[in-house]
Image (tube, rainbow over all chains, first blue to last red; front, top):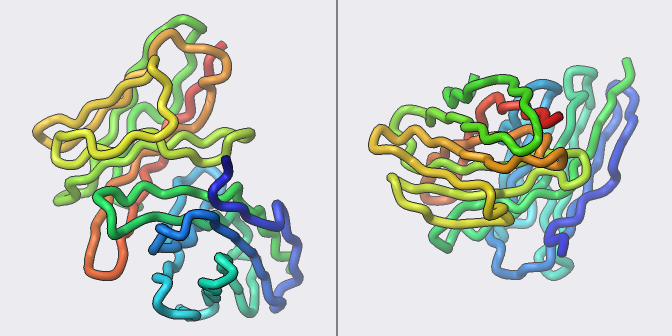
Amino acid sequence: QQQVKQSPQSLIVQKGGISIINCAYENTAFDYFPWYQQFPGKGPALLIAIRPDVSEKKEGRFTISFNKSAKQFSLHIMDSQPGDSATYFCAASKLSGNTGKLIFGQGTTLQVKP
Amino acid sequence: DSGVTQTPKHLITATGQRVTLRCSPRSGDLSVYWYQQSLDQGLQFLIQYYNGEERAKGNILERFSAQQFPDLHSELNLSSLELGDSALYFCASSFRDRSQETQYFGPGTRLLVL
């Protein structure tokens, strides 16, 4: 059972464009939704995260939009740059529990063309 | 550099063998998580230790086991290896504050079972 579904699987965007990656979750007990960025040969690194008490969080060019009723959240990368080319994973967790184990989406490979 | 170290970086072994993967968390982090990354299964949570005690278990095979030592480093033991165990294995240590938990991933150990 895939608890976090991510789309698209791959994405090609022109430099300066907006990249949008979508995720949907099933378990309403999840209360923490991070996005991780992974470059080839490296481990994932936290990019930005949101709690369900807010509908949007922005950090620089990266914005998470969160829709609690639809159980969906998305990552928007504004003014996408070639250096943003990486694999992006959404994840969900239950911080209110005694473990922060992450349930990851399948990942989106982003290519930003110069 | 996340501050999490993993050894070895690469491991090539044969079916039926046993290997040990080692992880040193960031200084001060009490939690260690292990994840498996493969092309077909994506990033999957295996197991979490907190200050030496097992805290949570995911889809970890019975052939796999882990432990966390008093100095907080952790080892993941994989035995009776099968071809399908070939994957990237990541450990992560975490820091939790009031609003979020940041998991810092190591560079991973790439396991190839021949």
